[in-house]
Length: 239
Image 1 (cartoon, rainbow, N blue to C red):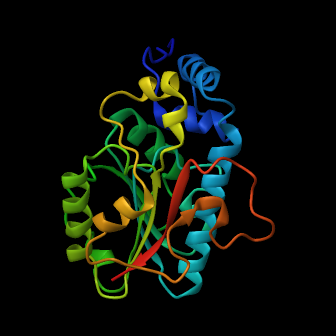
Image 2 (cartoon, rainbow, N blue to C red):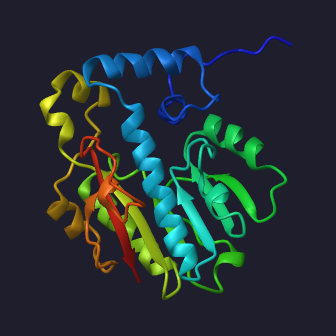
């Protein structure tokens, strides 16, 4: 049977390309290279972001949390949550059915790991297996798409849904692309950049850790921080 390749690029698969993965298609590579032409090399930025995710997950897991609810999960490879914390329970959630199908195939058969379809702006009840202790909500790569009102409502609903002691691992797009109007235009009108102060106000009842909201490369680096543009800022917050 001949496989039909997608005609539309996927952000998740573009990121897979930048991370050095294998689960992308020519249309994704073309879109990634077009964006690089308008902005610059993206691989180092997204690898730094994935490294931040790994450090955050390890830090949270070392603190005793062993349940991770991952929104906007994309392709769960190249240092995804279940690879960083193999003894944890992980539920991946994404809104793109094609990405969900690909992700579910990757994690099929892994104990305690699942991948489901869902919209982060309409968070459903936690799985029963997640309701008996603190959860880490991994909220990376999704804050740019809801407007302020929707994002604040979503973050508050997540706060309400998780048990006390839960953690929010978050990032958001800072204002880096303002200097690159062609690249910014590629993101479309629904793309939201935010100053750190503006994002902090949307966290509502979540309380940011002592590290604060910082460029992701500077959050608890294992050694010298990656030298990359400050395109993404993030941190941890707690209930």
